[in-house]
Length: 477
Image 1 (cartoon, one colour):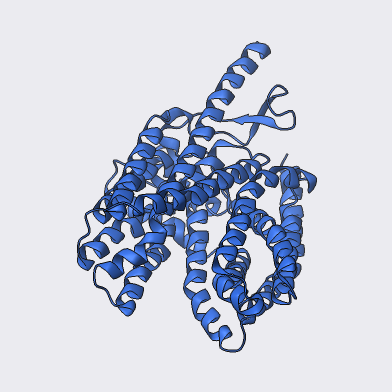
Image 2 (tube, helix red, strand yellow):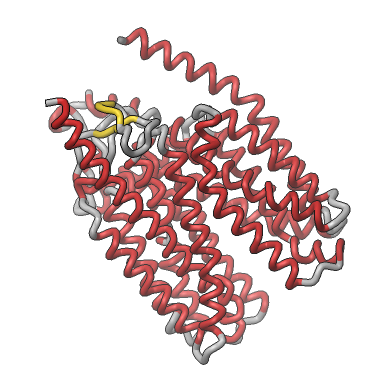
């Protein structure tokens, strides 16, 4: 009986692994298609007759839309399920890139950027789906591999886009190719079985010695469309309990999974608003503030990199490009280090986040004070690794503290915070460059130090809260 049960679970685990690999492919193709277009956008809008000011305003439209839509779309994926929300985002993004391929005027260019700005959240939903499919111990490893696959796509995309641009109508060919890639991704997501989009993190049944050798298989009852049935979510527990005791709710209370893609829009919007309100009023401001500070610090490091290399070391743009490509490649490969490093820290994510933040701060300082190019090369090598691990750490901590049942809302909120950093970083970089080419990274050091100080203050409180929670669970048993 036990052997038969374990065999069934191993079969489900193999299916789950196939879905995870499919999501890796979606992430790779997503950034591969997008990175074909990004380097060409400014040239195309200027070719349409836009002045530099108009081109800047048009370029900022995407970032502003992403700032307000990422949390909403992420929360919507929690409500209606990952599969339908991911399909919607992919198809509407394909529509946007298709319109971009037909843009012969500035008005049509702006129109094409609207659906992309509102719904290009496919990577965030993919991360939320991966967090649904794996246990907490596996999550950093899987997220690291997903980030690595996506980064490889981002490295290869500009090469193909640049090649297509050399031919007549190259921008339009690249845009239609990107739209086709998103349609193919939608087809891949459509083939994912609805009943295989959720893994349980609560019932440990048997140890899978044949596949990983170090983690246990976690499963739960499959739920149609990837919506969740368990009510362990730390951010939603109070509200769920309150609704379950309210009169007039069928079967003892309203459940989030009762809201589906086919439900009225007002019901979906009400659920989305409730989730965003719960996250906004939660005690997670410290994590989001650390994310904001480090996002700006990292962007300041890269903001005037090419100009600083030329002014400080008389480095030609070609060599600077090689240095940037080298760093990007290392960043992609660093995704495969996340799992082993997490095991080394025994899944102590707060300590790992603190150490990676300290390392990032130190490397920015060494870059700002570098006396020669070789020290810049050395700092770039470790900087790519520390930032990759730091991003995965802070996402995992957000899911740990907020709960995976609202992973879409949490990841979307994190993307909104990063979008704020993208808005502030160019402004701060411009002001800092007025004083010195080393001004932006020097300001980045100050912000990174603030993040380190915040972590030193807050991590003991996180540990105390975790010990209290563990004690309560033991007493309840």
